[in-house]
Image 1 (cartoon, rainbow, N blue to C red):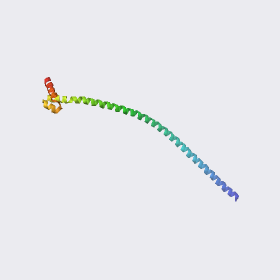
Image 2: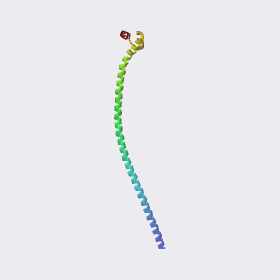
Image 3: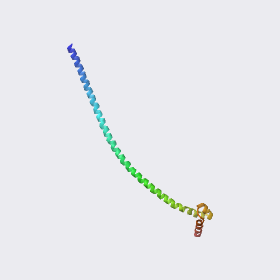
Image 4: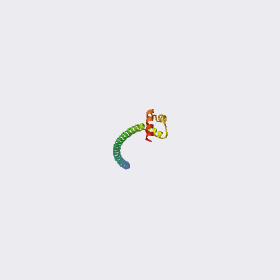
Length: 131
């Protein structure tokens, strides 16, 4: 009876050892898989950090480019405003000249072009004197 108890206990002990060995093997595999995952994640983090640095550099360059473009647009707008002011002052006289060629009188020029009587008379004299 003692022997059967010893055999039974030995069987349980063997089963426990086998179970512990299996559990240890499973734990090591899980640990190795976690280490691989950790290494992959570290590599991915490093890649993302590099990409982020590149994006930051690019955005700084783009920001500087936008500032230059805004300055250029501002200069062009100012230049256009100057040209419009310059040509706006000439437009009534061009229009008046065309009206004179079509036979408009001084009153027509004053009403249509916003000229003073003296301006209208001078334009009529110049235009008809040249013709």
